[in-house]
Structures are given as C-alpha cells and as structure tokens.
Length: 378
Ligand SMILES: Cc1ncc(COP(=O)(O)O)c(C=O)c1O
Image (cartoon, rainbow, N blue to C red; front, side, top):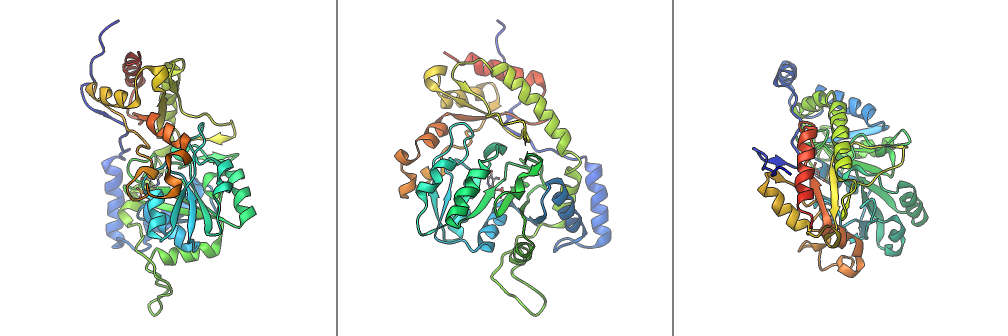
C-alpha cells in the first residue's frame, strides 16, 4: 500500500459557500440606489417572502442570528420555569433558556438519531415545566409526533432548534411547521446562510405580530413601545446575500449528497464506526454534516486519538458535540446534568466526530480522508 501523505493544505470541517463577487456587487448597487440599509428594507421584505416559500411554512420572521431568534421565541411564548431540552447540542440552545431566566432540564438522547429521546421526556415533567426545546441535531428530524403528543397531554409548548435543518421536510411538510415555533440559523457555516442571520417559523398570524414587535425593541409606532423587545433585525446587506444564496443551496445540497455517498461506501464495513443515522423515504434531508461515532473498543482507537492524528494529515475534524452542555461549568451542578441521568448522551459525546463536508471537496478528497481514518484502526 502506498504511504498516505498529508493534504497539502488544511481541510476544515466545513467552508462557507461564497456567491460570486459580481452577484453581490449587483445587489449592493440596488441597496445603494434604495438608500436603505436596515429596518425592514426591500431586500428584507423580499427575502422573508422567498424563505417562507422555500421552507414551506405559513409565517417566517427574519433575525440577525439564530440565538437572538431563539431568545425571542421563548419570550413570544412567555416561557418560564423549566424547559426540557437536550445536552447534545450547541451552547446556544440551553443559553437562550438561561437568558430568559428559565432552568434547562437535560433529557437523555436517542442512540440512533442523537436527538432528544422522546420516550424519556414525560418522566422529566414537573409543575414548573412550560415547554420542550428539542433540536434536530445535524438536520435529522426529531420524533415530532411523539414530542407533540407528550406536549399536548401536559399543555406544554414545543420549540424546535432547527439551526441545522434548513430545507428538511417530513412527508413534503417543511420541518419548520412542527411545534409552536422553529428557529433556523443562517450562520456562514450553515448549508444556507446570510453571513450571520436566522429566522423563526410558525403557524400563527398573531405570533408573527408579537415576534416582529419583540425583534424591534417592542416599538409599535412612533408613539408606542408595547413590550421590552430587543434588536433582532437583519440588515439589508445580509438579506441581499441571503437572496443570492437561495440560488446556490440546492446545488450545494446535491454536491453534499454525492460526498455523503462516498463516505457511506468507504466506511460501510469498518468495525467500530457508526455512520450518520438513516431516515425513512418520507424524510428529505439536507446532508449538511457528515458525522461518525467511534467505538474505542471495536475500532481500537479513541475518538480523541483520531481527532489528534487527523491533524497530522491536515484534516481538521470537530468534536460536535463535545463537551455536552450538561458538562459546562454553568450547568453541571443541575440535577439533570448528572452523568447517571444522561448515559447515552455521555457515551455519544465521547464518540462523535464531524468529518469534513462541503461542496468544494472532491470524491477523491473524501476517499483519502476515509483511507487515513481507516489506517488508524488497530
Ligand atoms: C444547534 C444550534 N443552535 C443554535 C445555534 C446558534 O445559531 P447562530 O450562530 O445563528 O446564533 C447554532 C449554531 O450556530 C446551532 O448549531
């Protein structure tokens, strides 16, 4: 076998999709002509409509990022007390609860999907529980039916962190139509982006009015401020980039589908590796990430070993999501954070590794990454 050489340049876990500079320049000219930079300008209005259609949702409100959007989602539903969520997510998910003076209650995850285990939610409900905040981790849909059933039985709200789930559908239905509100992140590293940005989606016209007030300081008109809102507005330049990026997202998704196939083929029979969860035919995925789990006993090497050794080959993978949110210094004193309460999340957190995934990679790049990974096995 020929010796595996490092990549000549660093291969990061992802790389933002860039539109052409000419497309951006054209849109900048439109903005300069309109002399409107922020506060519900023409680009913002058009993007809101275009995304409402693209995500197949009745209502959508744009935001300057996903975190502020999720903070506003909690405010708009008047959540308080305790909210049941997952420890296997990005820091923003429990942090938005803290910013709303809500205690996050961590529920264990499903070993297959890595999403909140819907069968375990009920046992965590107390008189203080007001909602379930679930995350479609890596774009794999949660068990939306079961979550809604539990929520309905106990009169709880359901909020989805759909930061990873742009364009995901179940049975032709936009993922953002499930629950009371969903949040999408349009951060530069996402499949679809507005440089920084985000959105809330929901099915309720009154909620749209409340959310739009909350994201603009609660200002109703020049004479009235009706609630303590925040600045969650998306500016015109980001909105314009977002309009351009809508023309890129499906092509990028197709490239990633092809790269997923290569990973799947190359890694299918490697003992000790669990590949991305598969979904039913009725689910349309976005193929944003490629994540594996490494079982140290079967693979002969730990996830941390693989992560470190990959760097010697210029492959910069990421340990998403490690540490778990329940391990953060600000949350580890919670009763729900105890390791014995979260056995699956703690195991998955030690095993998970996000591998490079973006449309500019070639099939040969992926084959080489897989060969390097397989060479670590003992
Ligand atoms: C699961 C999850 N939730 C929330 C966020 C926060 O979104 P934003 O970066 O747009 O504020 C992110 C990532 O960026 C995320 O991955």
